[in-house]
Image (tube, rainbow, N blue to C red):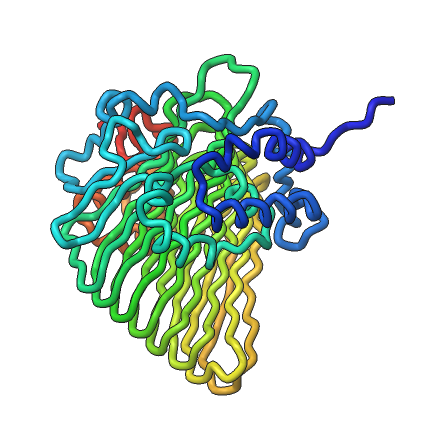
Length: 459
């Protein structure tokens, strides 16, 4: 009987076979990081249901169902096509600096490194390896350690992504939009694993907003394993909006790592509107006094879709604070997982931390596993956590019905009110209005997958 080769062993074999191609133009620190990553993957493999962090998410089954997964080592044909010919954001009022990757590669149709007037640089991570090796080496992989399978997988195989550096006192007036585009050929026997890697460095006293979008250009099965590291200097403010609206055949593991210095403020908002399978990992490390993190999330799933939000907020220094609120609505046979862990280190006193997860189930077949966690090794703290799972309130429905509102519209109104606590955190007016409309359409069942852009919908 022929022995079945595990997926992780296939990946390790792919790396060893193509190692010279992968490392052809890589600096030494990157070669070493990749070697450590593939060694970890070889020894530990991919996670399965026996591991606590994946107990409710069968990632190996998801990957197997997509088809024969391969790692592309050369850019796709689309990388030479002008971005405007394949991607367009139709929010006319949204004024942003736009950047993108195509199947994990920075477009060759754009300058590989673009400079702002005394306000830093943005461009290809692969180009930054060559042009700024010392700067990249100082930060690359310092947050995303090769101690988790999908971090290791990205480190080993990622060939490109977006690099952004903003020096001290940078004030970026317009949001930066980083779009991860997935281009898949129809009826392809092989399915490429898309593995973009982003590295963003924000200096002291800086202020900027980042929009991270994931968008599929076709309805073909796809798998994305993206990773973003963000370093936030003292007194800096960074607001990060993650928008996920992919096809029902898509699967994605998206990992975000954030490091904060003293007096910094970071706000993240992860909005998952659509996608067959979505796993969001988010790790925030508070490493300076008076650093604050605000972590928000919204997930709207139906049919047999699955979303898994895994967050970790680490209070390493005294006098830091965090607040976390995730809300979700699950319809049909959709399933969800929320695992939120807050860690307060020894002697990290005077911590103020709050965490909550609220989920609405619209059917008896929808299900959620929610696990808020506090781990505290200090005694002078103010920490709380909680979770609620329920259905639309009958009293509220009755009240609206008694005011002449039909049951369908009453349900929509209650769900909109439920989600607005998250969408109202979006401070960019044009973006807030469009996302609110997308949420409304999603709740009405009118939105399954955007045709042109993750922010575009049919009016």
